[in-house]
Length: 193
Image (cartoon, rainbow, N blue to C red; front, side, top):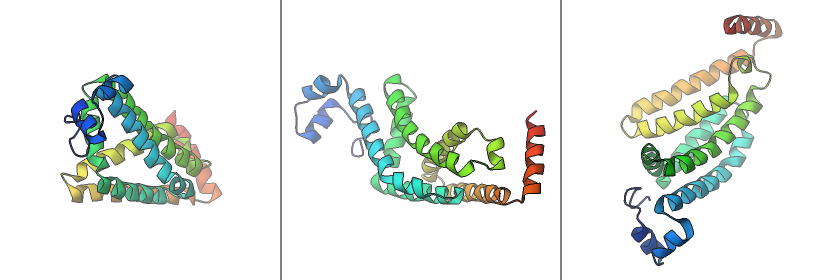
């Protein structure tokens, strides 16, 4: 997919790259889209596993952002950002790639959600944040920033800096004393009703 793109990934090109008969693509996977879906999930699982230790070591939202930046740098260098963009575009017009692309995306979201649950437990932020929804928003934001960087690198950098500023705000809220935290929780409850 890095060489030919999603549109150029045919049974013929795949078989030629693998040095096998193209009939094997259909025999084992049924279609090129099914093979691409399996490859997407498998490659994503490998990437998630490679970063699992880094996610587990995160102790702040700013560290989570730093892991995201490191991940982005590696994904860009390997050509995975381009592949992701193509898969997301192809998934818009067909369910055959939407499901496996979504499942692969969910692997990242699950890692982010686990970190957010760990970091925000007991935080006043947890009072208003839908953690699973927030994990999806973070994952989607990174994909968006990765794609946006291709057309506006400075704008993508500003977006990352804005996320870092939000992380600082959460840290400040978490460092409030007991009286201020109670007042904040009370205000949050009132705002939610």
